[in-house]
Length: 372
Image (cartoon, rainbow, N blue to C red; front, side, top):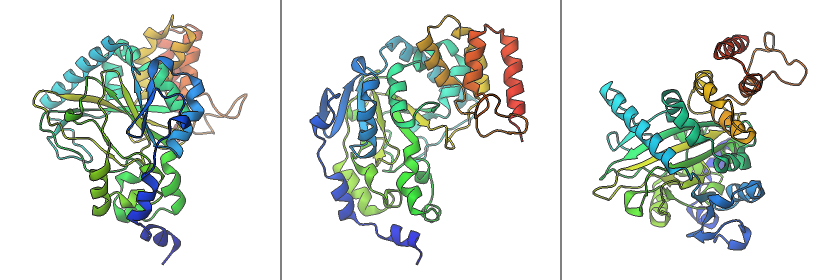
């Protein structure tokens, strides 16, 4: 038996309980306005960079989940985005596209894959109002640092929509047991450190409407990716999960290694819409492919005249933030350690007042240089 098999064969529910049966202490999270069922609750009006060390610790060794009330204060922007998403759902249904769910039965909900790019290309003004958010930016930087890459998927759950199975998420959470057993222990312990999950409530979501079921502290259990599929762990999750109601504009963020599942919509009249945010470090492979050059072209006319902070947030939400991988023969580092990133190019285009045609030309040239 190799060491890897020994690591994954030592999966013990009592060890798991010892990891998760803990209490979140208010004094450890002084920036939170309260602790609700072990989950720190923050006020979006008071979020700034002083919270970054607290949040880093919270996701790594703490409860692994937090809620930010009023993270998005522009509720009109949420409503405008919801209207675009509804139209996309109808258009995709008409085109015969039936988006399935990873962890729920087909037909239980409406799913928009790559809602981030689809919103940007269909309604760039709405996209910028919706995504240029300093609260979300601070959260992502607390865990992923600069250059993070945003993606999103809309999940709309109708009345009677059933729960997902409890799970962990991408990367190892999307593998079979046989596949994940091929990866060594450090990958199981650390791969989740490069990703962050979240969700924006597009309507008020009472508990009966099925907000995400969460098990605080479960991200710290090192064998959790293999354990998540075992019946005894799933039973324990179902007996001990936490659900918190959300109001429109609230955000929940959690480690992808946290045991979680979308809840059952037990209402007769609430159609639950949440935009599921998935951000990744620029140093890892993201789950979805986005045409960030097309997104950069779409938002460019609306970037001119923005103040520096809003411009930074807009570009962070839109363009590719990392200069690698690339072809260093044709795209060498000149005057530094790395070539210019797409975000750097887009920022330069705004500051130098390029035309849309010049931006098109420079983006195409950059993409060509990066080809093998």
